[in-house]
Image (cartoon, rainbow, N blue to C red; front, side, top):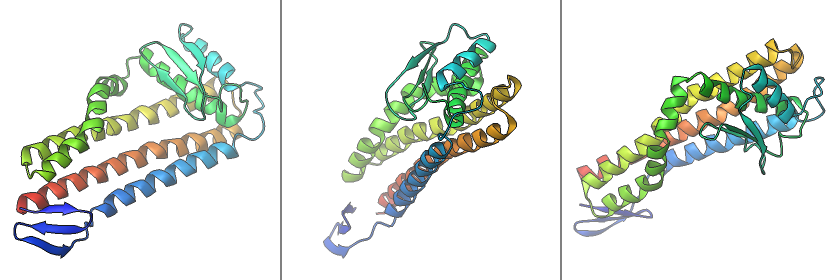
Amino acid sequence: MSFLTSGIYYGSRGFRGMYFDWTYLLAIAGLILTLLASARVKSTFAQYSKGRSVSGLTGARAARYILDSQGLGNVAIEHINGSLTDHYDPRSKVLRLSDSTFNNGSVAAICVAAHECGHAVQDQRTYRPLVLRSTLVPAAQFGSSFAWPIFVAGLIFSFQPLMTAGIILFSLAVLFQLVTLPVEFDASSRALKILEQQNILPPEELKDGRKVLNAAALTYVAALAASALQLLRLVILSNNRRRD
């Protein structure tokens, strides 16, 4: 059996020299993808946050108009702190808009608010991927919190069942992110369709808004890719330990 610590390889016969764990490259690649996607969405939002939409609406007012038009007058709208921390809470039926969206009258703010309204419409119509994602939340949270500690414990003590348990738990977090993709893409599609049907944004602004939502979607794709690379790393480390 062997033990890996910070590039030093210890075997059953003692010190055997330096060892480069190439699987770190997988984690680094995932981190780079995440950072690039985050930078992209922030720069795109900033670009289309300049100036006001010809509609004269703020993110909050646009959200209220959209919700009412979809028969969702029961959904409340709240202001929360932060930038791009907007979200819809299906449990309390509340749509929360951040500082960068609530009183902002830009195309970017209106489209972000409309996207969150898209989630409210999904909830109203029992959109199956949204239901599945909500069901997976507890398991995904548990998996993301305890997968690595359990896996590392198995790695340190060369106990394969613990490593396997860590991989399974982390897989739940990856599954959650996989299910999140259709939920987010569908919410954006619904948002753009409603904005067009209700004549909230003219064609040129809709084109700009689509760029904002596409950039936001990339963050979910990058997050899934990063998690998948981490999962692959766990599997490789587990297999290496099994061979040792």
